[in-house]
Image 1: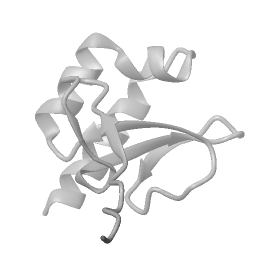
Image 2: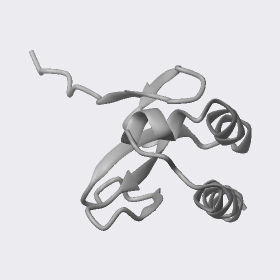
Image 3: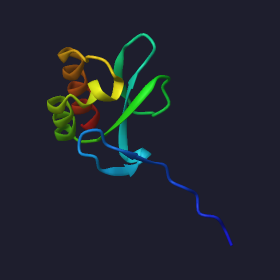
Image 4: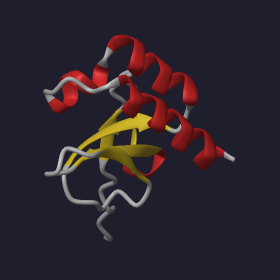
Length: 91
């Protein structure tokens, strides 16, 4: 009998939906304090996951979910950059 490979599950910080690690996009805060999208899911730093949907990111901005996830005050410019990155990533 062959063992089934376990698929890592993560939760979206905006809508709280669980999905496979590959079904979500990772947002990373590295040691320098930079916050950016990590489509590979392998960048060093603290990670938070969000759905591949602009609406989920907008909800995360509204609820300041990244502030809670990274335990810092995230500037509005960072949220705007993440929105632009996600929109370009979707196309």
